[in-house]
Structures are given as structure tokens and as C-alpha cells.
Image (tube, rainbow, N blue to C red; front, side, top):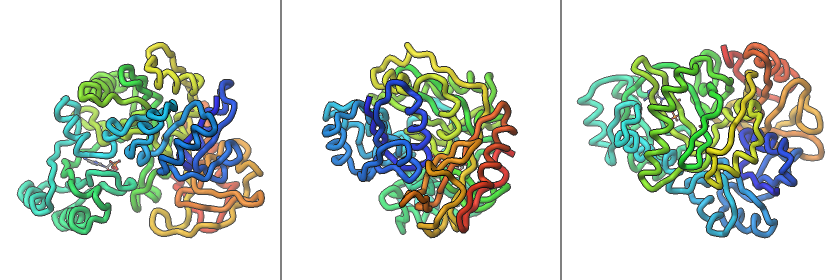
Length: 419
Ligand code: AMP
Ligand code: GLY
């Protein structure tokens, strides 16, 4: 098979590495890819949002399957366009990807189908939102832009002033553009967070092994929110009993709800959960594999990923048994100096071999570019340094050992992933 993967981050590198294990794969293309991906697949110079470009390339090159990994092309209907052109695609159609691209949609879905989540109100003008927050007078309060906002659309306001600033900047100053036409004002809930990715063909759902993200930039959960500075799998807070409870009260009700709404979800559905003292609740849904969750989940997959993708596309996921390794996995993200605020690109990297790898670990490239055999930084999150082991401690030790072999000016990473 010829497979085209859309995207160019660490998640896509992890997907490609797993696809390469399949005997069914003859050729992998990636649009646009990155420096590390170029060692494993043929990168093509098409942007992840260029729907016409992707459809044309897939047709011209007789691509058998397109794997659309990022949120924005899914929300913009890339899978719909590919299907209309007769090309198989893994990922939800736009009418199902809305479960991530509109928080108003997902909150209303959960309310309608009694899926546990934090209490909330929706507003389409800032004065009404502020009147409500003032009258309610409970802090912290969570303010969320309705639409996609590069992972920055959630603000936890400690007092009225912070809430007022958040509401004004999202709704009046439109810092996230039209994503801020509506907002969700949400109850602040607490508890350990768990990420669960699941394969689903719209009828059957098969959860993957659990993971835990580390979203803050600095050690001890300090600093700004990022796209994720590291992950571990399994998540130590998530046991078999919790998995069963989540399946019954959250996972299955969600795919049933989407089917009832005429929006069957096919692809990978990501459940961002919080285990509160009142039970597990949904913090967010994503319509795709998480980044950097994928980097610790897929290395543990033993079943051929291509078989699973085709079963999802053909709606026969019930026929497949998916097996996972009992090993643990850890991923430490190495980021550019200054990330998640402004940072430089084009800094030379040292310590990796010609394939961008280091012995004893797997280096998933995110923001890198390869020129004349050398690697240079090309983004905020640069590498996901990943290792597996019999225990979590062993995987962490191996990952940190590999991190220490790699250097580039300004590099920073958290030293407390999994601690
Ligand atoms: P999101 O972008 O939806 O993943 O939200 C970013 C982070 O904000 C989550 O990982 C949580 O840590 C936090 N968060 C979101 N909603 C709530 C909530 N209702 N209560 C407490 N924390 C929240
Ligand atoms: N790591 C969180 C996400 O992919 O949205």
C-alpha cells in the first residue's frame, strides 16, 4: 500500500514509524513532514491545510490511504474532500470533527446525552458573560473560546479581573479570531488528568492504552501551557476498574450520541479526562491522535496499525483484536529556548546520527529540518525523545539518558516527566 500522512510533527513521525512496521506498506509519503520524517518517508511540499493539493497528489500518485492527523484539516473537511474524490481516508468528516472544533457543540452534546463533564454556560456576548461571572462569584472560573485556538483557548481565571481580561480578549479583541465568537464559561474541577485515545468506526470503539500529558512548560507544573512537554503510558491513575467505568459512562455514550446526531465519528477519538471525587469527567474531546500522547501510545501497539486503520475505514472494527505490550513508555520533549513564547529557528543540533536517532531510544522529530546531512531546529517543540521499558522508571531513565546526548543552543526540557 501507498500511504500519505498529513502533518509534520512528532505525532506524525510516531505514526509513520509504526506504519513502517507493517508488511503491507510499500511507500509512505508525508505532507509536509520534517527533518526526521524525511529519513523514514518521502516528504512532499504540500501544506497540511491545502485540501486541493492533497487530493490532487493522492490521485496522481495512486495513494491507497490518506491518514489526516492534525485538527485543522479535519475540521476544514479534508476527509470529506478525499472521500468525494474516491480516496480512502482515516479521520472523521468535518461534521464529526466538530466535537473538537466547537466546544459549544461538545458541551451541549454531553449535556443532552448525560455524559459527565464540568457545569457550564454558553455566551455570545461579553457583557452577558461578565454579568454571569460576577453574579456567580465562584473562582477560579474557566473561560474557553468556542473554536480552535492552537491549544491556547482555555483560560483559568483566579479572580474577576482575570476573567474580565480573558472574556474581553477572546470576545472583543478577538485574539483567536472567529473562534471567540462564542465562549463557554465553565466550573473549575480538580483531579488527576488522563488521556485516552480510542479507535472507532462510528459503531464500535476500542480504547488504546492510557497516557498522561504534562502541559506546563516548566518543572513542577509551573510556567505557561504548551502543546505538551512530555508523556508517559500507562497513566498510573487509571486502572482497570476506572477504564470500565469510563467505557460505560463516557466512551460508548459519546459514539452513540454522535451516531444519533447523524455525525458518526470514524477515526481516533481523544478523551481528555479528569478523575474528580465525583467520578471521571470529560475535560475535552479531540478529533485526532494527541501530541505527544501518540509518541508513548503507538510504541506499545503490537497489532498491525494498517489492519486497524482499514477496519476503521471499512467499519468492521468489531472484527479486529488489538493487542498492546505491557511495557511502559516515556517521552521527553526537547523545546526551543523561549518556547511556548517566541523562539528562534535554524539552530544546528548535535548528538544524533544521520537518521536523527540516538542509540537506546527513539527520537520522534517535531520541529526539525535536515539540510546537507545536518539537523536544524524549525519549531517550538523540536524532538520527542522516547523510550520503552519494563517499568515506567526504566523507560524514563532511558529517555533522559538519550536527552543528555542531544544538544542545541537554548534547548530546554522538563526534568520531572512521570515524577
Ligand atoms: P484544554 O485545552 O481543553 O485541554 O484545556 C487545557 C487544560 O486546562 C486542561 O488540560 C486542564 O488542565 C485545564 N482545564 C480545562 N477545563 C478545566 C476545568 N473545567 N476545570 C479545571 N481545569 C480545566
Ligand atoms: N497533548 C494534547 C493534545 O494533543 O491536544
